[in-house]
Every structure is written in C-alpha cells, then in structure tokens.
Length: 160
Image 1: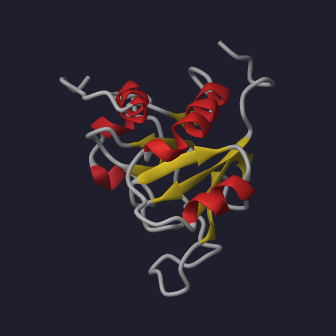
Image 2: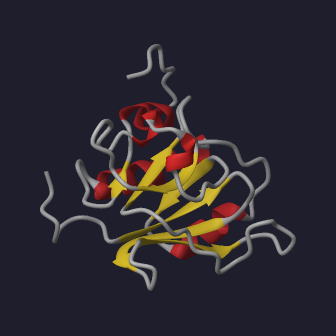
Image 3: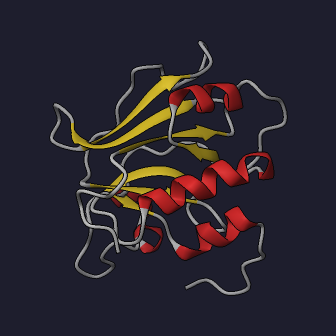
C-alpha cells in the first residue's frame, strides 16, 4: 500500500461524451476534492469549468455498476462502496469513462478520437498505469474491483 505522500495527487478522465475531467485530491473552494470539467463540447449541458460539490471522495465507476465519476461522502453502512449507495447520495455524475490519464495532454488527444466507449481498449495501457499509480485505499479516489476487471476486458460474473 502506498503512503499518502506516494499516492497519485491528480489525474484526468475522458468520458464517452468526449469531455475531460481533472480529478485532484487538493481541496477546492467548496471544501471538496476537485472534480472539474476542463474540456468538452461547447453545447454540452455541463459546461467547461463546472465543478462537482458535496463529497469527500471521488468514485470512479463502471464495469456493470454506477458508471462515470461521482463525488460522495463515505457512509457508515457502505463505507467507500459508493456503488451500493442510493443515487441521491451521489453528487455530480459524468457519462461512462473511456480512459484515465496522468496528463491532460494525453487526455485531450484521446477525447478527439471517434467511437469512444467505456474503458476503451485503445487506452488500456495508459489507464492501467494510472490505476496502478492511484494504488489501493487511496485517501480520495475509489476504484471498485469490478472497474479494474472492466478495464482489463474481463466479464464480471457476480457483483460484490
């Protein structure tokens, strides 16, 4: 397990709608970790610059459960298992995630491609490298095991 000093501090997610989101464990002006749209289509309902508010952790979903990025507060009953929470407890939500990147430049190149799909195998290597850099039990970013399986392209037989 990585110590908090060794954990990844920020990353970028590209969504199926062609948007890029910055995720950072740095606390924003609302007192939450940063989840901010930094690039996307001009006519999208969520404008560039929009920030999610209302949570202390960032859930990275998919793999047959809640997809996209969500902001949430851990609950006594569910802990960090945001995919088991009532959707009213989740703040913000993006479309499904195509890939995760450590640099904005790589994310921008990805978002401009055609035929984006959830956990797109074209960016599997970059995504797995970013997942590895996040590590287990990150202070802010939460990736369920089913998402890791989805990234690898393995079928999920049972939900945890």
